[in-house]
Length: 237
Length: 237
DNA sequence: ACCTGAACACCGTTCAAGT
DNA sequence: ACCTGAACACCGTTCAAGT
Image 1 (tube, helix red, strand yellow):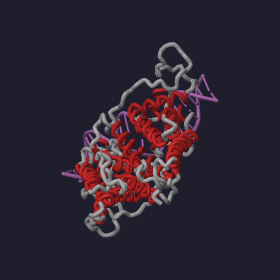
Image 2 (cartoon, protein in one colour):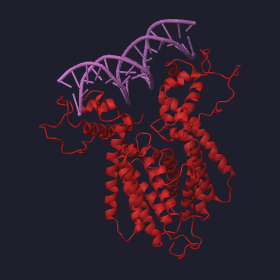
Image 3 (tube, helix red, strand yellow):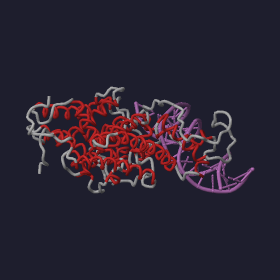
Image 4 (cartoon, protein in one colour):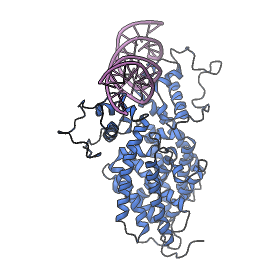
């Protein structure tokens, strides 16, 4: 399979563990207590990062945390629950990215805010393709059972719809079913991100390095097509 | 996990096997020869249909074909190769669907033809969600190694781009980077289909039964936004 | 209260042996 | 030429036993 094992960066996630001398090797058997739950999530996060969601194995996470194969089940009912915890961590980072981008966007240009939400989402997906896979595939995680996931998703959706509603109010875009326009925007952005992570770009003439700009340009095409032609001043009916 | 095991219809795929009396139960051990390859693909196709790509197991396909666990490896180098054969079957059906829809679309309205390609793709994805998953996830199959998959994908892309080029030529849509507009259209349609199969619609206010119409309406929004405002006769620059 | 390690029912894949 | 069935190195998950 096409899993080339990505960049094994040392993710500075879950910072400030109880300091204990040297660079904490997961070999040590000083365990017997400690916060195994967090250690397992951190291990799973790195496994996802290294070679995708499919490579995450409860046993391997346990190995990296230095515990036996049965230990994780004292903290997670099953593999799905572990993956859901990974997804919550990822979704929280995505949410922050989008919120930060929105904070920088001009209050005065709602259509630009709409575009900005999409662009931030795309940037995050390109920067974190494997984590993006985890949050987007409902068969891997228990989305409905997670307040964090449902909440963050709801928040992203609201940001998109609010920006769009404001743009309609200011007549920057034509009137039209708000929810459907938001859905189309969301589908476009999600589709671009998924084409990227699912490896479709080579077949669509997008060079390996040029994904990011191509995605933003495709987004621009949509937003600009939505933008109301200034020459027609009134709603068409 | 959320795999409720779909509708186990008797797919009349791989028709006209060597007739042999009663309804061919895969129990029989009359094997020892026969076209195991086709039988394995048929079994895998049904497994995908019943409960998604992840439920496909080389061993289970072998069981259903009535052979031992090692037998499939005489016909497929690995599980990926079996899944690729499944994807080729699915992609061929998708291609036919789109081609048929294009044959019915008016030669005179290229933008409608562009929309029609997307709509046919969406209809097929909704009707065959699990098979759609197989053809779209490059981690499950060897896309690059399959002439059938690359060819069909290329053909779909060409249909989209040709319709769009003709629409630009007739000034039905504004000029603009053809490839990027095609990419945006493709991403929108792919995104809608993936949101459907990935189970996102409940969180986006789309009712269970209303997926198909909502998807087509979202597609309409894009196509109509692209449609050139008749009041502005000349390209903007 | 938390962890170990054997056990169970699975996988994908290989390979000597059979027909 | 094709298929069997044991074997190997894995999984997820359970559970009695240990500390």
